[in-house]
Image 1 (cartoon, rainbow, N blue to C red):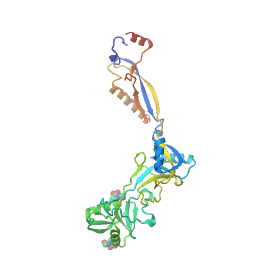
Image 2: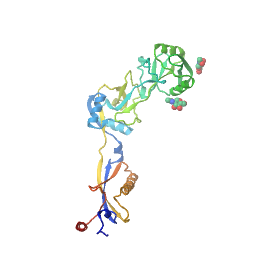
Image 3: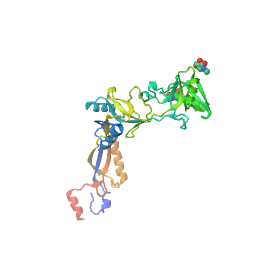
Image 4: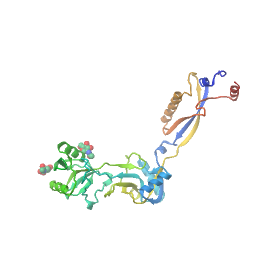
Length: 343
Ligand SMILES: *[C@@H]1O[C@H](CO)[C@@H](O)[C@H](O)[C@H]1NC(C)=O
Ligand SMILES: *[C@@H]1O[C@H](CO)[C@@H](O)[C@H](O)[C@H]1NC(C)=O
């Protein structure tokens, strides 16, 4: 080693052994990183009250993204000795729209088949609307292939056309737009009667009413995993509905009036574990400056790759800077240190 007359700046450019401190943070195992931690709250509240409670004490109302998490949530609730409905972070906006985007006078006209609880959004899958041979409407799976009703001209002076081929709702819309104006918009009882008369012996026809799924998690997570109760979800005229997991139905989800009160489940993010590791680097190439940002980043990238190869991708690595802004410091023996201070 050739210590001695080097200025502090160039001392980091020397050969020798250096040490730096690496900060490892992350979850203990990869799988705990992915799972939400659930907390059952036995006090019955409305969905909005439950949301505020969870946001105050934990992270948010429960988000469920996998079958494994669904099981974890059920276990959490069961362990507390509860076995009925609990609010989870799910909610949906009910926003029916006409295919031609009509929102004028009569745009809110509906003729639901109330005797069958329509719209019933069966298993959270019915997003398109048709008319029965009794002239009443119900929501249904958009993929059903059936006859449909288009209109010609403008809505003010329109002719209704019942098309005698069967298509799903999307294809029916395309056909109407190609050959006529659009799928039919029904604005009043007179429109409804006219279409009803044109149906003749058809049991069911598509009309232009539909809605987007619009299902959300309270914490803004994307909705992709689902575990719906395979029965009716009676929407009535509700504009917003909230999600509950029903332990009596194996934890399956249903949408209910947000004003009902139930116990609920919050989630929190697993606590991260932070570890400091001292790293010793033996430098042979004297032109390398370990405290150069690019060099530090490169070493970190290599280490991160090693961690990932070993299945530890949940761990984040970061250099710990000392008060002088540097990470690497030359390893010195007591005598060396003394010698340096003397210089
Ligand atoms: C409607 O039919 C078309 C063509 O068969 C298909 O590509 C499309 O996915 C269907 N849409 C729905 C909602 O089922
Ligand atoms: C519609 O189709 C059915 C069978 O597909 C046929 O019996 C009927 O005559 C057709 N009606 C019209 C008006 O074309």
